[in-house]
Length: 368
Image 1 (cartoon, one colour):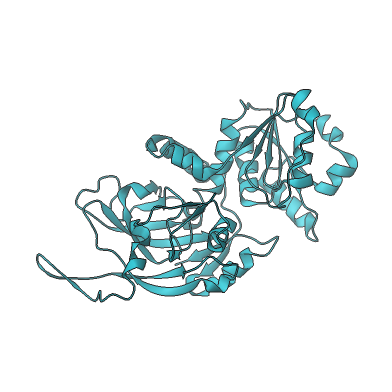
Image 2 (cartoon, one colour):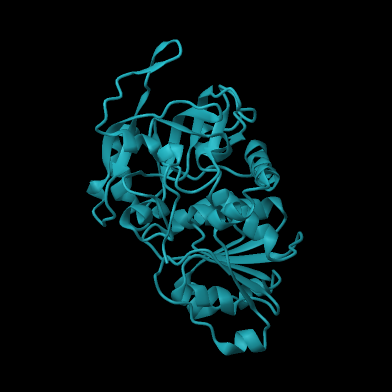
């Protein structure tokens, strides 16, 4: 069942002002300047991405506990388009501004705001922020700071995929240097982060990818990031992984973002008492789970969704703060690099949205 975000968030509040006369409002000292922003708005849930249009929106007035942010960069992720299509577990009230991830710079804060200040870089805490816009007004609690000594691209893409990889490598098995992790979708943004974070932890990775015309280039790219083994699904199905297990221990942790046959390859490769964590289903096919893996290999099946993890810890920002500090530290030390993205000027947003719908595409990031 779809869950809709609460109506009235300040980040979406400018939409309710459309059609009203907001050229100016009177305050204690005279006329208040009303700020506007350019935003990518959708007014219906539809598979037609052309329904996302660039509009000018008035911003809500700054309250004592609110913050005005200038967006710097915002990725276009498949989940963002799923929300436009009405196919995501969480949907914003319509009309809505698209985008869930990105980095902004604080321009102005209310009198009772204490955790951020003008000039800080910030990222949204929760899904549904509406990052595809040039400016936003939101509550202080909707934001968390990130350091300014990493790149804008690194900051814009830090809060979802790298954090997903970090949590999965830390929360499901007690991994130590020398252990092995197996994953499919290894060339995805999460997969690339898994490779790099695991390498920094001294953990080997077995990485399964789909066959493709540029297979050799993809293998080389993943090896450059620190991948120990990179194989196609066809190679694993035809030859197995016994030659790998002569050099590396069987994995206790498997990460599945594909499902279908590919997910079964990860599952069947796990060691006794291993854990399979599913965090995506790109193949849109069910995961086949033979009973023998549950009975005789004592495999544990888990799911992971970064959005839910953040919501579970919303009242304890120290957990989110600690994770972001650790991931940003990996970026700062050179152990984690941002994904190889296509930088797209904001007015050319249509290209980024349509490209994201296509298979085997690099992540596109809108630059405001």
